[in-house]
Image 1 (tube, rainbow, N blue to C red):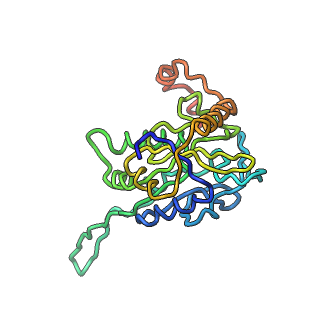
Image 2 (cartoon, one colour; image 1 turned 30 degrees about the vertical axis):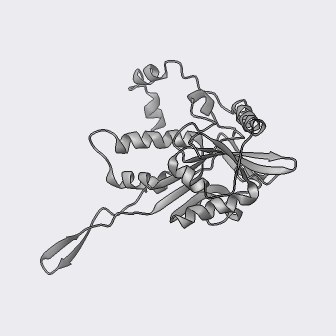
Image 3 (cartoon, helix red, strand yellow; image 1 turned 90 degrees about the horizontal axis):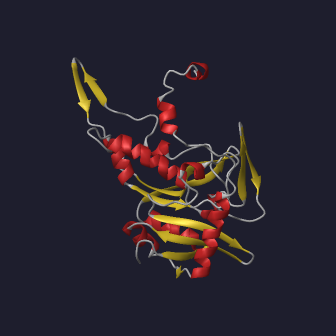
Length: 262
C-alpha cells in the first residue's frame, strides 16, 4: 500500500475502521448530534455519526434537516471546531501543596491521549496548519500543543455538499483535502451502493487502513468521486474577492470600522 493510492471502503465495513483506531488506543472523535447541532465528540460506533442529516446555513441561521439518503457526512460544517481538543480553552499549568510554611510545586503530568479525528474538512486542515505555524514553528514552541498534535490521526472527508455560507474555493482551501491527513474519504452514494473512495496520505494511514478489508479503486470510481467534489465547487454560497487582500488589510489598521465592531 503506497501513499497517494486510492481504494474503496464499503459502507458496511466502516465500523471496522473505528475499531482499528481504538485497537491502537486512539480516542475516536467525530461528528455527532447534540442539542440539534452537529458537534465533535467521542464516538465508538457508526450509529453515532449524523447519518441521513444535513445542515442549512445562512447569515445568522443554522438548522439540521433530514436528507433522503443515509449519508454519514452529508453536511457542511457544524458550529464547533477541533481546536478544543488541540488547544483546550482551560488547562492546568501547575499545582502546589502547602504544608505549614513550606510550599511544594507539583509537576503537572502531560496529557498523552491519542486522538483520531474523523470528518475533518479541507478548510479545517488549513486552519490547523495556521495553528501549527503559531504554536510549533519559530523560536518559541508550545509543548502541550506540540504533544497533542503529534498524537493525532486525521481522517479527512472531502466535501460533497456546500453550505450557504461556504467560500473555500475563493480562499483555495477546499472543498478537497490536499494535505495534512492520514486518510481522506470521499463519500459516494449510488442507487444500489454506498461506499467511500479512500486516499492514503501517510505511512500511519497505510498501516491502519491496510488492516481493513478494501479494494483498489478503478478509474470510473475515481472519476465519480472527483465529479462530486467538482460539483461542490459550484455550490459555494459565498465568494470572497481576495485581490490585493493583504495590502488592503495592512492599509486599514486604523479604519474606524474596527471601533464600530468593538
